[in-house]
Image (spheres, rainbow, N blue to C red):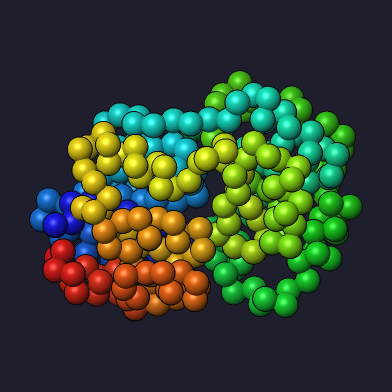
Length: 278
């Protein structure tokens, strides 16, 4: 019996217009009335989530790709970077003219370019960028012409007085091996081909979900999850029922227990009805 459901946000919980559809709101509400806990598992941070879920009475929040987990009443798990690892990331960014954002419990600070990129409009736009988009050229242009390009620009940010749970960097998929080699104390999560989320080594959505389930006395077998991107694969594989959205990447669909309709066509509601959760 399913007792908890986790939803990815972008491309899953949200429709193309950046809002939660009426059918999804209805489905979540019905599931909760049936005693099922409903929440998110996302790369977004708490600040970004507030406006998105303000009209959803969600039960739990696995944020920053599993590094910060809480419910309506308490903090359940917090796994920030060690200071030395933040120093390694900052050194790499300064030496390579990289755009960076740093995420804490209450705020996100860093590159103006990246803050614009974190906006809802740009997140939606990225999903429609063609695969042959000249990522390498754009990356070099941003590095060269960024209005904030200056040495040591990340070294003295006020946010470093707080625990940092995730860093977001402009970096294309072809650079994965370079990043892994340069930053061995980080793990890397992607929800698009153009930016990468850096989390402490060993961090993942699954790790965050595991801490929530342990707190509630639940098991993965009693859990259901919905996702659309490659960074959702681990989560969908480990839960009792892993559902890929109809708009999901092919690799995500291939490992899912069930492929539902898209986020534009009542995919969440249809899957919950199929499995008799509602």
